[in-house]
Image 1 (tube, rainbow, N blue to C red):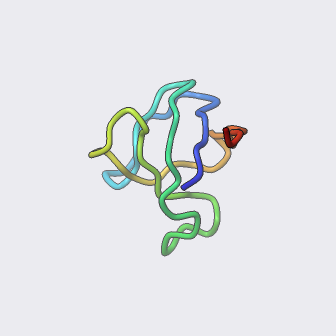
Image 2 (image 1 turned 90 degrees about the vertical axis):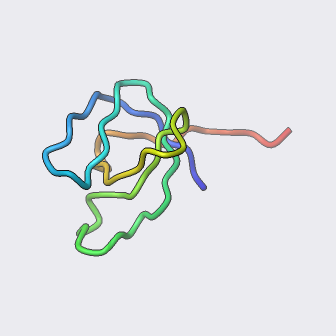
Length: 68
């Protein structure tokens, strides 16, 4: 799974969307969920393994990680 960082806070407009705050880290579970038109990803907050939902792709950026 890829880790992304929230650039902005997001308040959901629908029950299947995920709320997150600026600088939250998110796991991307599915970069091509049904009916998303490529602008929404299914994600889960790294800090809360039970909470997941759709996020707008333009609110996040990939976290660069290195393998130790």
